[in-house]
Image 1 (cartoon, rainbow, N blue to C red):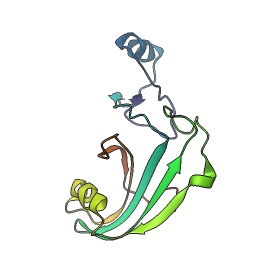
Image 2 (cartoon, helix red, strand yellow):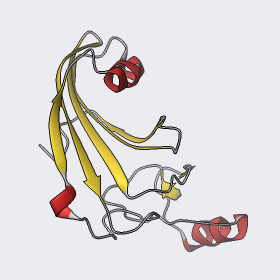
Image 3 (cartoon, rainbow, N blue to C red):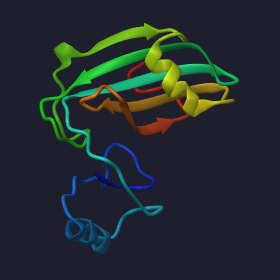
Image 4 (tube, rainbow, N blue to C red):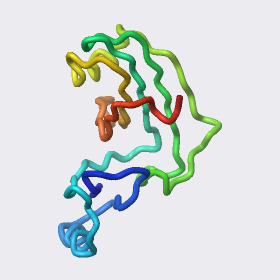
Length: 136
């Protein structure tokens, strides 16, 4: 996944399969703030985790799982299977929250992480925002 370093709502983001495709995007312009090459993780499920932290400790949080119609996509250019969307509260002892909260050591405030899981179950974080997620 080739994306502008600064951007929102999938603008300028593309799935590239070769160096030539990436070079063509660079030549077209855009890429405000440069470019980021991100691992493409196949799968229809995407997770949004919104956390409230105090000095790096999770106070509370909500996990929302989205299911999309395609295994390879750039949001928002994909349809969601809304009937499969699921949200649940998470605690500081949730195993996945423990791992992801390590990215936020010492942080106080609200943070939203978006990620997918590899086939082995490990999370691949592709977005971190110091704000409440749009899913709340």
